[in-house]
Structures are given as C-alpha cells and as structure tokens.
Length: 105
Image 1 (cartoon, rainbow, N blue to C red):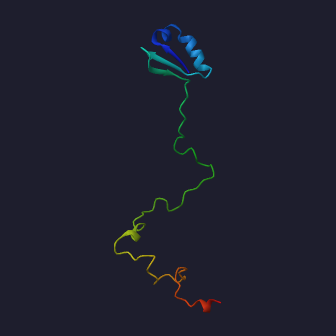
Image 2: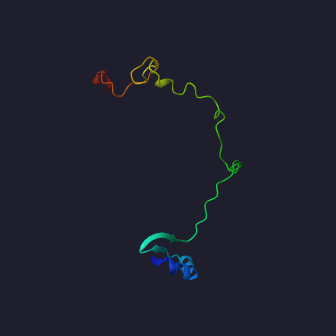
Image 3: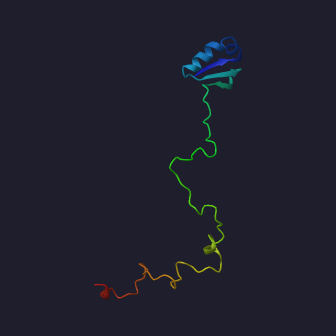
C-alpha cells in the first residue's frame, strides 16, 4: 500500500491509477492523515429481474398463496400441548418407562 499527499496525487494521478490497475491500493493523506483510498473499481452484481427463473426447473407449491390462519394455532393458550396430550397420538412414548421390561423380552 502506497501513501501519497494530496499534492502528489494531483501531480501524478495517471501514475497512481496505473498502480491501482496493477492491483495496488493508494492512500491519499492530508498532513499525514489518510483521507481517501484509490482502489480498483468493482462493478455491482446485477440483480435478476422478476420472472427470470421461469423454465429453470424449479417449482412453487400450489398452495403457496393460501392463508396461514391456522398455522400458529398450536401457540394459543387454549391449544392442547402436543407433548402431554396423548388422546390423538397412538405411538408409544420412548421416554415412558411404565411398561414392564420383562414383557418386552
């Protein structure tokens, strides 16, 4: 990294730009304090326009735009707790040790 004064930057701008093109970074200072940096220009990435993914092999669910009204019903205060309510779940709880271990053999 090269540091130059404002006067030197104005006098030798072409030379400094050539250094930047070679990949160097140039700092311009006023009274020894850095105030600006000359670096290579990096163009911004282009953002794809809407619809540009059409025909690219991806899909969206048919119900994508359906309302989500009941999605968070399980978080309501009066909703049954899925961890303690066994009335609708017929699968055995692996943490339940109430079954006699001899009957499993």
